[in-house]
Image (cartoon, rainbow, N blue to C red; front, side, top):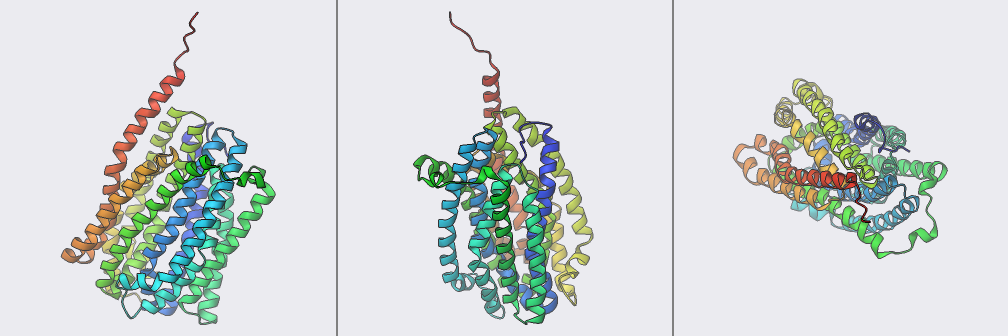
Length: 454
């Protein structure tokens, strides 16, 4: 376990971020391996089918991931405050909430997946494969929620390394099963779905076993599961805004995906390949942000208010520098990167993908700032502000989908992400400035000497 309330902030944040970043990369390998193997073995249509489900996958799975991340904020605050009983109580409450959400999401998503794909105007030549793939992914929602909950709880205690090991194992399982089920058993896109879900089950079991053996602080007892209104309210107040924030952003992605579907299968395939690389390239920025949520929550619990502000400044420098380098690299090597996803590279797909990289990669600095500020506010327990920022992202992506895609074609659609980042920052920055003022006031009150009245 790592106490992030002592020591130089930038060293702690960087050390926490590295395994988190590597872990997130391996988590991305779930999608990358599926896309890479599907594209090279099954062709452009199968690639487009898997890619066309990305936004609804984000809608459902993103909700679950946002929820578990939000629930762990309470756990991190209590860990920072050295409240062991509160940590166990938080974990038990999170288990109950996550279990209920897992059941509801699984039933809803499996029952209505076809209708959602049809509403998105998924091209008829890929809709059956798309349904086949995403339905299997949705059947694995309980496994996804379990792993995200357990790994987020470990991170709340300052341990970002252990989930990394389990993600490495899961990624290897995923890739091996992809190759076996698709190429040997001829299962098509269904094989990719089964491989992903199986890998998530393996990661969940590994995480649960590790907590049972090595983390007594998370050993919950029967009495920890006692329903307490105050506990539920505290967790739902942070967890659900973060969950809805992810889903709100995903709705914008669905609107954008609908616009892409109307532009044709080649556009969908190009956006799928470019999007996977984009997710890969932006993981360090996301990892810095997630690290700030834990750093902020622990130090808030420890009442080290100015230390939070110092951590934000140092993290912005680190993440901002990376964003500039990453953006330049994906623009320079655009064609080589996209060619990895296709057995016979299509010149039109390469051209469209390069357009995506130029528009998005040049704006990565906005995204770096966005992640740091958003997760810092979440670490402070201000869940509603990031949700409002998510609404701003939704509006911007919808604007690009409805107007810019029609007016400018794919370049208009590709500008959706930078516009969404800008819209979100317009909400987050004023809120962050206000939060900094509040932290400074709390720090001053804390340092003010008491006056004894004789």
